[in-house]
View 1: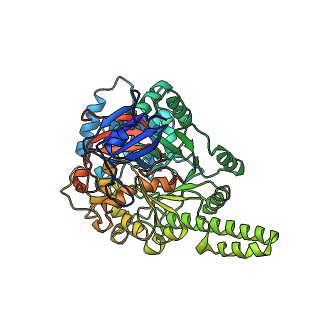
View 2: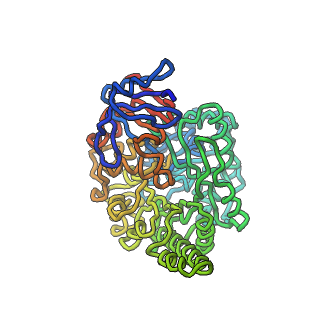
View 3: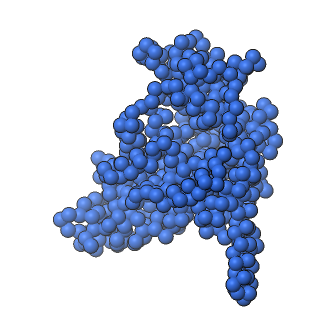
Length: 568
């Protein structure tokens, strides 16, 4: 088969060794790398239908994959007003006042990226934004996307005038008189008010998603592990793929919420494998807790406000049973676990599921053949548990040593978002996250290097829309751990910074392994998928503080060019 695409005069970067390969060119056919070699021999493979690109010494890496992203919900949430630049109450009030002046009478104000640190020592409540929002229906999502600040008018339109009871850990925060302060914690509470707000049309949602995905491709992304399948997300992916407008390869994990019964778990199992050529349901996303910033994480000991004491699942044992059922069915899981107690419980659940399956296998073998049973009995040892089902824990913001080492022991992937540490915490621990945890726990923030050096597979992601999606920025943050807006500031936990090669692997070989696709993704090798990112310079030798600005010259997904700069 004649190649559809040839890249010449390239520096091909091996993500395993970190070395530039001897080959200087590659050919792509039928969405795969068909040949590697020197420019002369690869050029000879071309015919009139082949697109030939002379890279003039640019660096080719395997396509960069975001290990934790929310494309559909992110495209909708980021359509509003970006509040992330507001660092204190005066700047927040001023920004909101400007936005209010642009509204039509009765129009809703939507904001996102609100940093609770902007409120300083004051509580996060609507009263702090009066009179700016008086009479204005407004929903301001905090940066963690687990909480929203609603204006009094928004609460009134939604009929929310006091506390409510939910099936999951969620809360309408109220004052001592039982009157809502405007702060809504977790989805169940936020949705009460969101339902009263105007919603975009399906066509608008599709266009916003397509625009966001194009921007991701332009940033160098060829893939993403989508951590939700809410609403009509799957239908939108299918529609974009059918139109040739899906520029990322997506692995989708639908949510399993507290209260999901056996029939619901079976439905999630049956949904596995649904998809197209470029997107597919593979895994299930669960939540073990909320966030430290809003006091809904699950900590071994309460935070300094006396909060973060409970699991997201009112009955944590029910979560454990769901993990066992999914593991037994061969379904990988991704558990949101931020607090140390949540991470411990997630690992406990995986360990129990592995041990139960190993014991069941040994018993089945024993019943069939005593000799074979002897071999299987060794597998029943939890230390040799079957880790073919690759479970993950997401976020892992602060964990002690005894918990950290269990990731490698159990074969659980550590999915990390280093830019959360960079942009939402401070080296001096004066930020809300650090103040809540106290000095001891804040000093073990986002232990990326410790997890990596313990032998765990580390995957990096943005958690967009929580943090920006450009992958070079994510890799850079994992290396410098400084605030993105001011790289002269000191790093938070510099001893946890990843080495350059570790960071590259965490967005190439790491995601491929987590998805069980290491035999065909994450490498520059013949037969591997032609998902490629082309950079102006070597990301391994580019200083961490300059990496985010490294030009992305070309992005190729499934052998198709999804982004091409004017420079090539």
